[in-house]
Amino acid sequence: MKIGILGGTFDPIHLGHLMVAEEARVSLNLDQVIFIPAGRPWFKSQQHVTDVKHRLAMVKCATASNPYFSVSEIETTRSGPTYTVETLRELREKYSPEDQLFFIIGLDSLREVDRWQHPEQLFEMATLVGVSRPGHEDFDPASLDAIAPGASDNVVMLDGPLVEISATDLRHRVATGVSIRYRVPEPVEAYIREHGLYLSEQR
Image 1: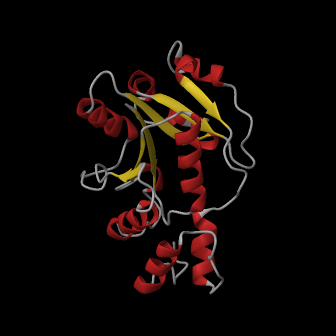
Image 2: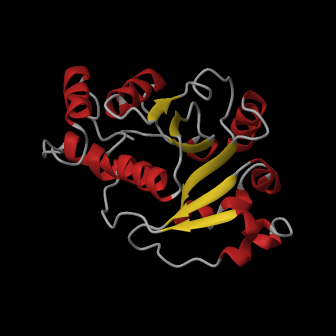
């Protein structure tokens, strides 16, 4: 099988995430795309992040209608900071050696992958799928060879949807009473309203 992996804080998940996942699925002929909400993302350790039960529930709401999408709680049940290399290691052990893993990542994050925990191991366990986004369209995969020789051979570049939606902006909109309709799936909008999320901008 060819399995896509899309991780993130998803605070909240929005249509941009879903469009990227579907574009990767179609372009790379993936059998499924697994959404993995972060438990305690190390790079946001100094920021307030919405309780994982809400972020997980919103991801499940957002992906329920697509039979090719699934949600994993692998990071939400792990204690301590969340590191991608640990997640990929667990998934690599779960699936057979014949199964291919494709880790989907924005080009803005791909540029900083050298700062991640054991970045050289990422290329051994999965093909990295670099997705362009507005303001982050240019990237030379050869620069990754400084992390591990031949790393660029295990990278696929993908043109992402040129739609700029950010979770930061969505939280601000909710806090200030501005509509988020057509930026998040309707079930996610309903969930945010029902649970009173993002009403405070203290983040």
